[in-house]
Image (spheres, rainbow, N blue to C red):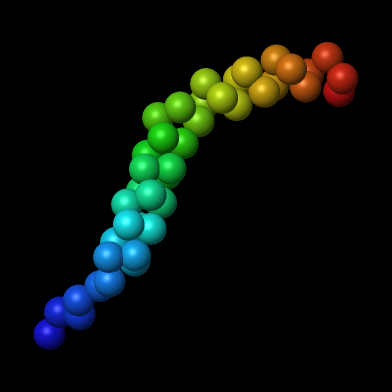
Length: 42
């Protein structure tokens, strides 16, 4: 028997999936730029 989720729950799940997919796709580029900023101070 499938449980019906509320609209708020499905909206939060979609938002979370969007953030995860953005991090997966753009995470390495963001990490490289952050390293360029921080590396001179290490």
